[in-house]
Image 1 (cartoon, rainbow, N blue to C red):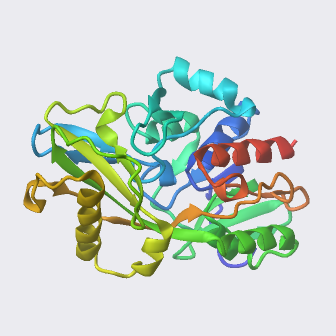
Image 2 (tube, rainbow, N blue to C red; image 1 turned 180 degrees about the vertical axis):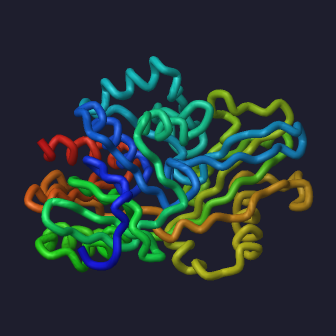
Length: 336
């Protein structure tokens, strides 16, 4: 291996980079096969774009969870039916139908989105606040280093479950990974940003036409309509911008973004009976790698048996939360 490593550095059968839906589902499946699994995550918790944020309602003084990324997960694919039933049996998910942005039945984590990934992760080793910055291989062993070039884990099987641009960065120096690198590069060109924020409005919000067109807002989600998140005095909304609008305003100050999104929220909902000062809102979150477009489902070229190196993520299958899980499931199946 290049560089200095510690003899005490833990060794795992499999290391997964990324604790989103695909990464955590793969951890579950591999542990069922008897693997000793470690999941590395750059943020402070699990979930990735299916994570949660805890807020406090100003009107009712309640603590609530909001989902700034994936608002729900559709689990209607035949290959996920058994998992869906398991999650329902253990009360990890609940059915939820949004009347605001789409009418199809879907599921949400209970009591929050990250409950799904925490359940899937099980007893796998989780290392958070650690960004995998460099990977290298010597013989049959992989070594993962963080952004300070510090070794964080060794393994036999290495899986990258990260956005395509980050995946491409890790693969760039790996001999024999050209096919996977090419797939990641192609997908990175189709990644789009998104701004997201939450806000609180007093009840009741005037009825409005939820099909009002907007070049600014991609989706409005009434978080307090989700199971276990109701608030008797207020409504909590999540606003997610269109990728086109986010691209135009990606570097704007967050105060400007908040003002623009709230103004469009009031226009779309005809919410003109409440002044801006009466609305509590959170600081906008910028998803630089928020949405994936032009997704071509890939069930091959994701696992390199010679290198024992895999790639997974929603960008390899349909671009949504269900696609992330299918990508992880199919990769584990390829591992044999």
